[in-house]
Structures are given as C-alpha cells and as structure tokens.
Length: 115
Image (cartoon, rainbow, N blue to C red):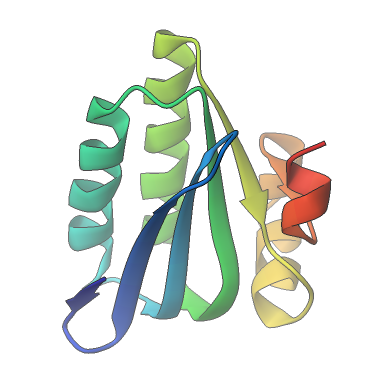
C-alpha cells in the first residue's frame, strides 16, 4: 500500500480477471500528481481490465478526475478497459455532476464491474 501526503492511500490488487486499484482518503489537488504516477505504473503492466475502486474516497478533486481520464486514455490505446466502482454517496454524486458517468463505465460493486 502506498500513502501520499497522509491523505490518500492506494492499494493495488491482482484479481483473476482484473487489476483493482483501491483509493482511500482524499484525492485532492496535492495528491493528484502522486495518483497519476501510480496509475502510470499500473498502465505499464498493460492490464486488460482495471477496476478503480473509489468507495473509500472522501474527496475527489477535478484534477484527480483528470488523472483517471488520462489513465483511461492510456488503457484504450493498449486495448484495455477501465471501470470505476463509485458505490454511493458524495463521491458518486460528484462524478455524476461532472458527467463522469457519460465517459466512464461506472458500477456500484466489484461484482457488477466484473460482469
């Protein structure tokens, strides 16, 4: 597990059908660059499916959303896919308000994301 600025923790798990990136805490302006670096490392492994689990995130700044969009673009070039597990609550509402759900495949659970 990696912790950045003591506000954001990132855990990467290898699942049978996907790589799961679990974020917890605040993904604010100061954590966005570190998030981008972690996602770049994940991208280097060329995963077919990446699940970005945001259920433990309490704050998701627009610049962090941009890091996720950039990661999705890199995956697409490689032929990979990304699904966002947003659960319910403020972060999901923020993503929908930013129309993130129109450009990302969003799910509420891991099971739904793996379907």
